[in-house]
Figure 1 (cartoon, rainbow, N blue to C red):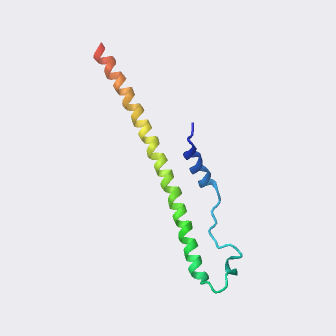
Figure 2 (cartoon, one colour; figure 1 turned 135 degrees about the horizontal axis):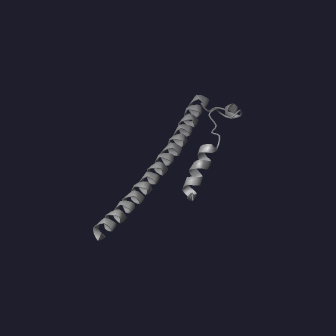
Figure 3 (cartoon, rainbow, N blue to C red; figure 1 turned 30 degrees about the vertical axis):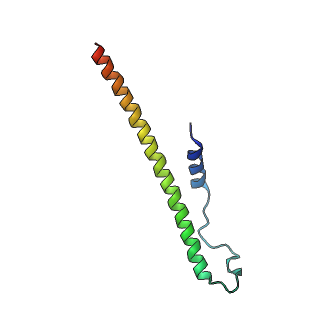
Length: 84
């Protein structure tokens, strides 16, 4: 069963990301559009980095769950062998 966070990451990963400036981007008068484009690219890059970091965190969490489960199973086996 997926947590709300996992669903959020999957949705964020599946959403299309705007990699180009919107068509009305140059409507700002007196504003350095190159600077705005650079800022927009930086924001997009940071959003993608956040999505990737969340995905790595989810994978790490799953690994911890698997390791914990395996450790529990080994502990049960040891208890059974000690009781024998």
